[in-house]
Image (cartoon, rainbow, N blue to C red; front, side, top):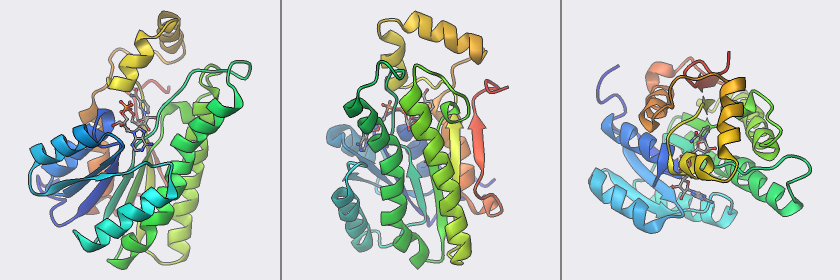
Length: 253
Ligand SMILES: NC(=O)c1ccc[n+]([C@@H]2O[C@H](COP(=O)([O-])OP(=O)(O)OC[C@H]3O[C@@H](n4cnc5c(N)ncnc54)[C@H](O)[C@@H]3O)[C@@H](O)[C@H]2O)c1
C-alpha cells in the first residue's frame, strides 16, 4: 500500500478528538486524506486539527443528534465540498446487567452506539454517493460477537449496529451507489475510556473475567485500529464490503 494512498480523499472521523478516533484521524491524515475531526470535545478536537495541519479541520458534532449531523453535512458541502470516507467511531460502554441497568442508561447506550450510526449513515449518504462513491467504516467491538452479561446494553448496541451496517451495504449495492460499509471490532485498546473502565470499582474482577473469557497477552494501541480503518477506507479494499474486521490480537478464538 502506498504511503499516500488516501490523497484527494476527505474523511470524517466521529469521536476523532481522543482515543481510537484520534488514532484513526492521525493514521488517515498520514496516508494523505483530508481529515475532519467531528466531536463534542471542541478544544481538544480543534487542537488536534491544528496539529495535523491545513488538511485537517474540526467540526462540533454530537453523534446522537440529527440536527447536529445536518449541520456537519451542510458545512462539509461548502468546504471541502465532498466526502469519501465516514468513520462512525464515537461510542462507548457502560456497565450493567439486566438487573442493574435502568431505562435511561439503556437508552443512552443505544443513542450513543446505535442511533449515532443510523444518523451518520443517513446524513452522509447523499454526499458519499454524489461524488462517485465511498467507504463507511463503523467501529463496533468484540462485544458484538460474544455475550457479556455485565455489558448487556453495550453488547446489544454493538451487535445491532453491526447488522445495520450490513443492511446499509446491501442497500447501497441495490441502489448502485458504490458505497461500501464495513465494521471494525476492536478488542481491548488503551484509550481514556478503557482507562476509566479499568480504574473503576470492581475493575479487577472485570479484567479477570475478560482474561478468562478472552485470553489476551497484550492491550492493543489506537494505531492498530487506525491501520485497519486506513485499509478499509482505501481503493485497495474495493472488493471488501459488508464485512466484520476483528482487530483483537486473537481474543475472539
Ligand atoms: N477502547 C476499547 O478497548 C474499545 C474496544 C472495542 C470497541 N471500542 C469502540 O471504539 C470507539 C472509541 O472508543 P474509545 O475507547 O476511543 O472511547 P473514548 O471515550 O476514549 O473516546 C471517545 C471519543 O468520542 C467522543 N464522543 C463521546 N460522545 C460523543 C458524541 N455524542 N458525539 C461526538 N463525539 C463523542 C469523545 O469526546 C472522545 O473524543 C467506541 O465506539 C468504542 O465502543 C473501544
